[in-house]
Image 1 (cartoon, rainbow, N blue to C red):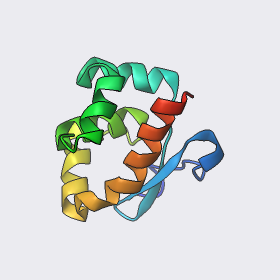
Image 2 (image 1 turned 60 degrees about the vertical axis):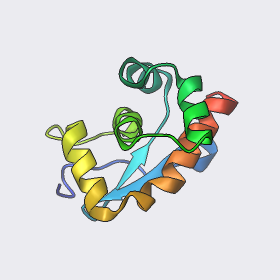
Image 3 (image 1 turned 90 degrees about the horizontal axis):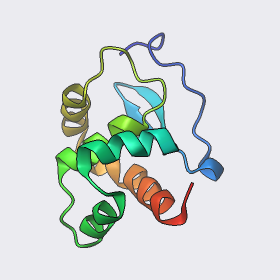
Image 4 (image 1 turned 180 degrees about the vertical axis):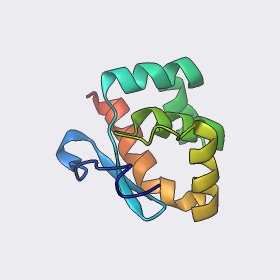
Length: 110
């Protein structure tokens, strides 16, 4: 990913956004209605996802899918597979603050 591929504005925590840095490029993760509807098509009901996360049983696949759909201005060649590969390369702990923000927004509402 090059800087030209991702020109997202900085994340705005007041809007429930988070930043995920991939390949040295900060990317904004925004849980918009349309993004969450698309994620729900992949992972099932979002409230069940939150319950699964609270029980410590959230899968990497579900996490990557949720984040993938909520990424703003993702590069055209990015797939869930390439996102997952980048996350695993960085270490899945990079997802913790992003996931906390997304799940919190799902519970509070957008």
